[in-house]
Amino acid sequence: MLTHFTEDSVANHAIVIGAGLGGLAAAMQLGVKGWQVTVLDRLDRAGGRGSSITKDGHRFDLGPTIITAPQVFDELWAACGRDFRKDVDLRPLDPFYEIRWPDGSHFSASGDTDRMIAEVNRLNPADVKGYRRFLKDSYRRYIVGYEGMVAKPMHRIWETIRVLPTFAWLRADRSIFGLAKSRVRDPRLRMALSFHPLFIGGDPLNVTSMYGLVSYLEKKYGVHYAMGGVQAMADAMVKVIRSQGGIVRLGVEADEILFDGDQAAGVRLADGTVIPAPLVISNADSGHTYTRLLRNRPRKVWTDRKMESRRWSMGLFVWYFGTKGTRDMWPDLGHHTIVSAARYEGLLKDIFIKGKLADDMSLYIHRPTVTDPSAAPEGDDTFYVLSPVPNLDNDNPVDWAREEPVYREKMARELDRIIPGFREHMTASVVFTPETFRDRYLSPFGAGFSIEPRILQSAWFRPHNVSEEAKGLYLVGAGTHPGAGLPGVVSSAKVLAQLVPDPPYVPLLRMAAE
View 1 (cartoon, helix red, strand yellow):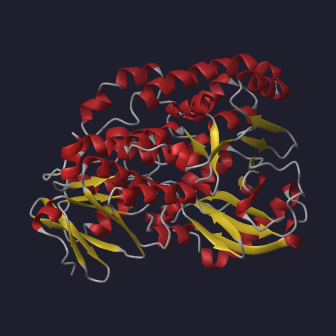
View 2: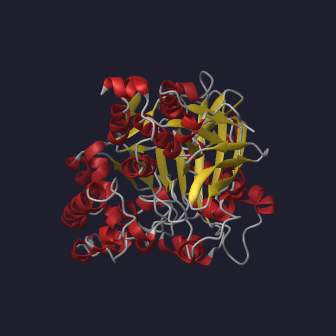
View 3: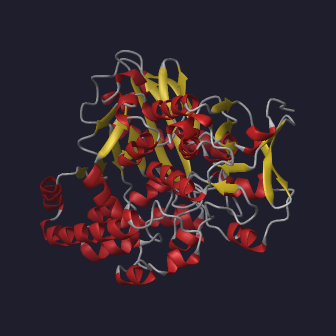
C-alpha cells in the first residue's frame, strides 16, 4: 500500500491510466489545473501505441508516423506555459506521401493546390473539375466536423442533435468513398481521395463522408514528422508532466478502478498496491476500461449495450526491419509510400466485413531515415511496413502463430517490387500482428485503433469523455470522443480539461500567481 498521501493530497490527486499520447496530454492539462497527477503505464516507454523499440541500433516507431494538425500540440504546450517547437523538432514533409498502383502510376500528395491539380490532371484530365468540387466538399466538412466538433464535449445528446441538419445538408450519411465516387471517375483517384480513414481505423466504404475534411486539414496545416519519432514527442510530454510536479510510473499495470459508492476512489495495481484518488482518467481502450477495469462493478445497461454492439477497427500486420548499407539505395522511395493493391473495394470488404485474410494486400511504407538519420546506424535504413488485416472479432479469427510467417513472405514478395534486394541487406526484424496489439496494448480483438469511427459510433454515440458509471471517472484516447489519430487523442484531453473541475485544494503557488 502507498502511504505517502495526506488527506489533502489525496483530495488533489488524479490518476491517469495509460501513458499514450491521450493520457500524457490529459496529465498535462490536469497539471495546469493544479491536480497532483500520477500516470501509470504497463510498458517500459511512454507513448502507448506511439512508443518505440530499439533493436541493433534501429529505432522502430511502433505506431503513428504522420503528424497532422500540429497546432493541437502548439496549443497544449502553450496551455502549460511552454513552446512546443522548442521541445520538439518538427519537420514538414514535401511531398506528404506518394501513392503507387500496380499499373506503375503514382500520385504525390502535397499542400499545394496547383501541384495537386497537376497530379489529378496527369492521371485523368476529365477529373480535374470533380477534384475542385471535392476540395470545396473537404473545406465545408472541415469547418463543421473539425472546427465545430473535435475539441468540444459531446456527452450530451443535444450537442449531436443540433448538428444533424448540417450533417444532412453535407450528406454525412454517404460514405467518404461514396463522396469521392460522386466527384471523380478514375478508380485510382477515388482511392486517393477516400483512403484517409484507414489512418484511424475506419472502412472508407462505410465511414461518413465527413472524413473528407482530412484533405483540407492536410492542405491547411501540412504533414510533419517529429525528429526522433513520435517517441520523442511522448518523452517531451513526460518532461512537461514532471516539471509540473507530476509522476510518471512505467512498468506498472492498473488492474482495477476502485469506487466508494458512486465516486471513483483510486486504482488497484496488478501487484495489489492501491493508489487512492478521487479522479481517475482512463487512457486505456474504452473496451478494456469497461470490461476489465470495471469488472467488479455492475455497469449501467446503457454502457453495456454501447460496448457490446460496437464495431471495432481493423487489425494491423506491421513488419519493422533494418537494412545495412542502403542509405543511398532506392532513391525513388521517399519517407512515406502507400502501395495500393489492384483491388480497393474488394479488399476493404474482406478486411472489414468478411474478416477474411486475403492473398493481396495494400502497404504503408515508412522510411524515416530519409528525414531522420538517427533512426538507424550510419549508412543504414529503418523500415516500417504496415498492412491492414482483419481484427480478431469474428467466428474464425486468423491464427497468427501459424499465419505470421506465411503472410510475412507474401509481404516480402510485394516489397521486392518496391525495395528490390532488400532481403539481402536486412538485419533487425520485428513483427506485430493483431495478437500483439491485443497483448501489448490490451486492445479488444487486437483492433489497431479501438472503435471504428462510423457515424453511429461517433460524437454522442461514442463512449463519452465523462463516464456515466461514477463521479470522478473520465476517458481519453482513441476509444472515446473525438477518436483515434494524434489530433483526436490530444483533442480528447482538451475536452477533458473542459469537464474536470479544479482540485479542491488550490496549490499555494497557483494562488500566489493568481
